[in-house]
Every structure is written in structure tokens, then in C-alpha cells.
Length: 312
Ligand SMILES: Nc1ncnc2c1ncn2[C@@H]1O[C@H](COP(=O)(O)OP(=O)(O)OP(=O)(O)O)[C@@H](O)[C@H]1O
Ligand SMILES: [Mg+2]
Image (cartoon, rainbow, N blue to C red; front, side):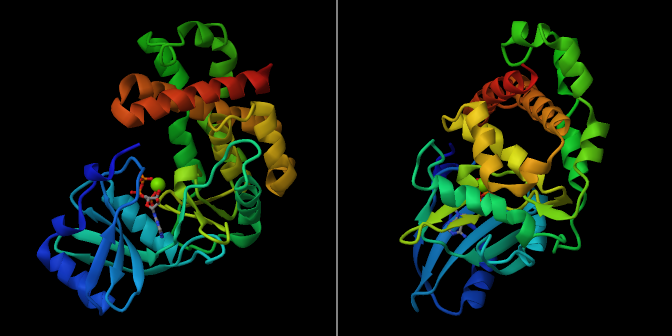
């Protein structure tokens, strides 16, 4: 996990940008607090105003490539129902920065471990996404196949580079034929077509369990896309495995609560599992180290266990 110090601070925003934000808030900021976690070097801060109103700000320098995600989050955020996500109050661009202001949710990251008190609520909200977000309410978002097809294709690159799967060469070598056969972007594009707004990054740190009620809200819709509802359940399986579920247990939890998961073509799920695991393995071996590299290493291991469960 990043520490908050890796992100810009509220005081670090250009004066002109802070002045614009203050004008939108209409009451002076009297308190700032920073969340823990995340991998993005963007500003994330809770602001409390003198009139006791609170807002959660995310902001990024438009010169950074990741700023496009903040723009996407603003586009998608306008269309999200509040039962699913914190409300987007407003978005502005000023002096080279984008700032998105959200309803500030008081709460913490839900616990995804087997038997946790948060898990039923988490699975319920994942299970509600198809109904809440079909037809896709955000007109501007692209097909999820574009995102998914960029995950596929890494197993052949790993084999060609001789770098194995993040240090697991023998695991990949003994499954090479099957991995190559399943690691197919075209199959992913076909199987993932649909008209639900899908999140594509469901993880505990993109969720908040509201203090008091325990209600789960989903954050960080910057990868939002149009596609089949099963895709978000598939993104969530490795997160449940990382939290301590067996692959069979993770799939069973989703099967009990997510209608789209019960209806999905099993082969499509295997194609997805192979693609995302290859993506993590390749990027662990060839991308940045640090917290992100370590996460990708753990995620790739969860993915290998998921693939073994599915392919036997
Ligand atoms: N509306 C909100 N209310 C309260 N806290 C929030 C809100 N939105 C985000 N947070 C907190 O800020 C953290 C970072 O938010 P988010 O995941 O949206 O950030 P990010 O910078 O886009 O990406 P990354 O996931 O890489 O950190 C969350 O894990 C959560 O703790
Ligand atoms: Mg996040």
C-alpha cells in the first residue's frame, strides 16, 4: 500500500486551484484528513468545512497520463446511483489540474476474509450491480472488451522472454499449451459484450463499509466500461482468494449472490482467469517494484491457484 505521503497534499495544489475549490465549497476548509492505501499518486483527501459540510476530493495534474482516469471517473460518476457509489458532487479543471468532489463516506475498507461481518454486504452489492447498472447508464463509456483484450496475450510474451510467470517458470511451462490456447483476446471481447456498466477494479480498497450501518459503497469508477455483468464478479474472484478464500469457496460465494455469475459460460471465466493472471505475472516481472509490484506478485499467485482450480 502507498502511504499518504506519496500522494500530493491539499496544500500542494496550486493556489489558484485551491481558490476554485474553496469557491465551490462556499465555506472555508478547517480540517483535512488523508486515507491510507491505493497505488495512484493523485490527491485523495477528506475536507471538512467551517459549516461542518464534508467532501472527498480526488485531484490530479493533467500533465500526468493517469489524469485521463480522473476524467473518466467524472464522466461515469455523474450516472452512478447512490446505492452503489458515493455521489459525485462536481468536477472542475483549472490551471492544469482536474478535481473531482464526492460525497464523503465515513467508514473503512471492508474485510473480505471468510466469515467476516462485512462479506455478506459486499457480495450483496456486487450482486446488485447488474440490476442497478443495466442498461449501462453512462453513455460515454467504451466496451469492456477494450480493457480485457489488453490483459490477454502476456503468457506468450512471458514464454518468449524466458521470464516465466513472475518466478514460477515450471508452473507456466507445464501448462503452456492450455495457457496459450486460452489466452485469447478475441474470445474475451466476444464473451464480455453486454450492456451493464462494469467497474473493472473491484477490490477491498475500492470499497467502503459505512461506519454504523456497514452499508457497502463502491469507489474509484475510473475503469468503468460497458459489458457483461459477470465481468465484475470475475475481477472479484482473485480478491477473495487473496483474502483467504479457496478458489472453490470464492466462486461459491459469488454463485450464491451474483445472478450473472451463475449464468456465465465457464470457458469464458477460464479465459478471463488466464488473461488477468498473465497480466499480473508479466507486469510483476517487468513493471515497477515497490508496493504495486508486490501486490501483482500476490495477485498472480492467487490467479495461478484459480487457474489450477478451473483447469484441474
Ligand atoms: N467518497 C469517499 N469518501 C471517503 N473516502 C474515500 C472516498 N473516495 C475514496 N476514499 C478513500 O480514498 C482512497 C483512495 O480512493 P480511490 O481508490 O478512489 O483513489 P485513486 O487515487 O483513484 O486510486 P488508487 O485506488 O490507486 O488509490 C480509498 O481507498 C478510500 O479510503
Ligand atoms: Mg482505488
